[in-house]
Length: 200
Image (cartoon, rainbow, N blue to C red):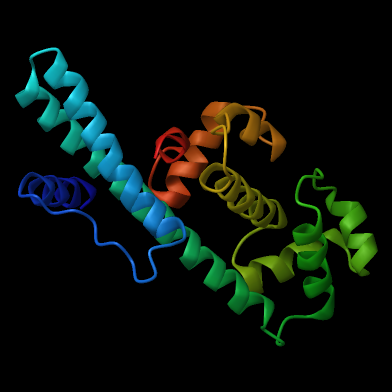
């Protein structure tokens, strides 16, 4: 499906379509619109100066299409995960110990997970806490922590002004010592590589 969307955006860009500027012309969507058009213009101008205008136009539209798709895909995934997370937090059917454990993980996701200590803090055994996570959250405590860390890493990669963040630094900040594992988890969650999000 991603390839089909890429081809569609590429065709639209070739036909002169520009991503619509959002109402109010401010915020990240307006910035994305301006960025895509500026990148395309700069690439065409650079290649025209070298006498390769046709190649420049083709490459600039392909780059703009890929940038747009990466941004839209990662933004949609982030919004879906935030909505799901908000729904889970409002679920009053969870045991109090599970709500406290989720709150503890959300409050300090950079800290390594110590399941026995977390279990003692919320007043249940490690096995009972794992069972509660499995039943109500649908994953283990460590998988939940990994999901929270990925959400924070994603926010670091797509947000912020100034110098683009380095993927390896963001991965390390959120508990990933292996950049390849981080990239695989990120792609599985958001559908794009972390480096493609930084480039957009």
